[in-house]
Amino acid sequence: MTTQHNESGTNTDAIDKARTPARTTSVEKFAGRITVWTPKDYGYIEIFDGSLNPQRVFIHITSFIGLPPTNVRGSFVEFTIGEDPEGRPCARNVVVVRGAK
Image 1 (tube, rainbow, N blue to C red):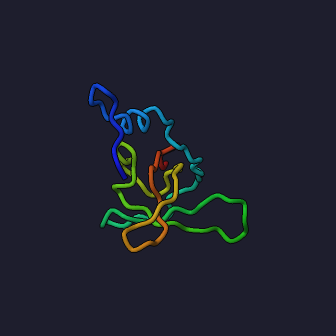
Image 2: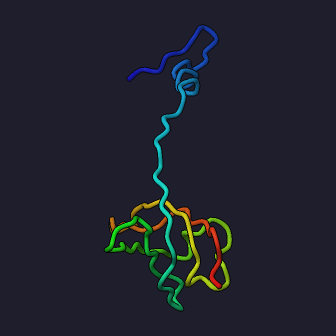
């Protein structure tokens, strides 16, 4: 592919690309409660989805936006779901809605 330049030598392909709006995708947020937390700084969130069979998703301390609460277990959180390096689902962008009591 050749790069387009105008008469002043400016790369017009780069300008066109910069003017193109970024594609946005809707990211589904989930709510849940951290039901398991280990001394190794990971655990599981039980997702509130209204089913009789609650689902769990893995969470690591690095998934929190900002500082995690002092008492992580029992905290209510909102999060998105991503994948770990092995392709397994895990919590991402975790925000504490209400800390544990």
